[in-house]
Image (tube, rainbow, N blue to C red; front, side):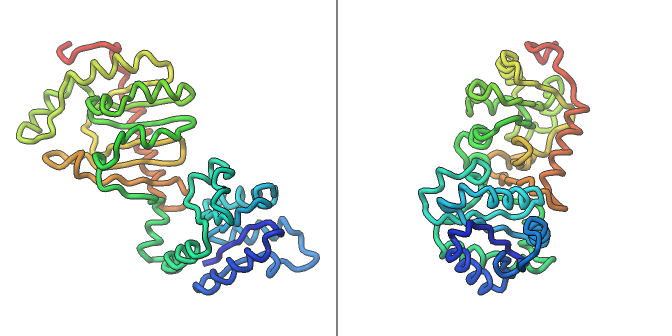
Length: 309
């Protein structure tokens, strides 16, 4: 596995230290001063080296945050879907990071970086478990939805352009002050899929012996609330959704299982999938699943309606 080291030449000594610990972990570090010969066209060589690397370690320092070349290398790596690992020479530099780097796990000591490198050595095996997780885009796992306070707000707080979501019913929204979230983000487009309220009674017959019954009155409250906002669209679908989804921008998909029965909100794990643009990425699969449901779902027959209509 090749590891490209991006740095400002003012930080050459630090870059060489990163090179040393990377090589010590059995990985193949790529440092320009060691692999670019005199007379070579630098940008073409850098493109080729980045294309061959699986990981980019970028040394973030007061010098590198001002270096166009460093950010060129970050951009190339990001476009190629590579793992980007910021290493901060000073912890205080975290506030100077661009937003797209602040969202990534970064390290502030060479010891932390070394432990990270040790943890990914297993990725060298193409059939390893860690490789499969990496390719799938898995970024985090939470015990359950109930384990995350203000669950919906927690994940959409960083949304900048659009949020797509699938819910079984609307009772969930009052707990997370859904209305306040929309008010805070007028620039964000929200698309919400809800289980068709006219089918609730039919569905509840199947759930009669469980603790997962759906209350029909929930929809009037939700629809009457969201109709106030021009950045919110709602559609209704007929099939019970076995996946609960929140898709934020084109970056993150939060997914959990909606089991029928006593298992549910308190016990279903929550998986956070990142759009890493790799083959086998589950973000793409769930995003396509959502769009198929959205295209086949129905517009509500008026914002305020009763299940009895």
